[in-house]
Image (cartoon, rainbow, N blue to C red; front, side, top):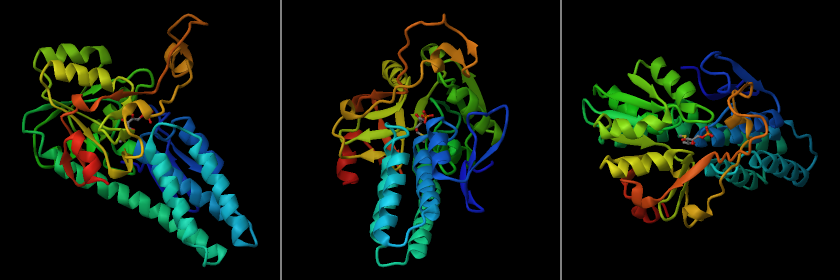
Length: 342
Ligand SMILES: CSC[C@@H](O)[C@@H](O)C(=O)COP(=O)(O)O
């Protein structure tokens, strides 16, 4: 598959997800403001991918700073960090990655400015490489939970497209498939931005993993008919008590899974676990443009002009609805996370 995000010839190159599945196009960002715009406009999306992209954005910005002393260099890089951090509020991976870049900046004060710039680039590239490795480790642990012949429901896109590669929830599915298990995936279309229809269906079809697309309101009926054996989703932020913020609609899937006695798993790396946020109630939820709800792709209206709209991009699934959280360190109950990741 085309890489979701990479550093190439001095630029941040992104597979433009706003154009998928119709057009496979690489967006080349040559300055950090273009990177921030791409994050805000969902050209790159998914918590880990946003973090990796922001880190590369910081490096790109830092490389363009012309300063004669380290203090002015650090000040300029700090402003670049602030600009990138103001793009999306919910996915904690964004802030985690930017904090890591700031730590690298602080650790580079004894270096010359060109060496510090290279150190920042190396750090961003390390974050990218690590993200793929974390997804693969997560996949290995999670694949044990999927038995041959089972059907897995997933919501939104928590795949290679949402990470630097391989995916979290789809990484688990991909690993089970690579182990030779015959599995089926049910992809919720994921209104309003259709990450399930546009991205998950596309990504799984690229890898020839059997996928069936449904609208979000079909999941309950399928569960009642015994057609879904487990659910695996990703996460944008996991609070210390194990509550999980993820794409709007995830909570409904979790409630349905509970009602039908179906295991509900969340797959996420350590960078998604935010122990500073005590419960899901403290997680900031992004509100997005009403046009996402009133139209398809901003151009085909599906609601009367001027209608009042509520468009939260994420919801919170309480820990008690989550069977387990799949991480790169193993599979844990939500209540065990705080101790394991302290
Ligand atoms: C591995 S991605 C996990 C989550 O980020 C994903 O499920 C999700 O909610 C993405 O939302 P998006 O608004 O597309 O960035």
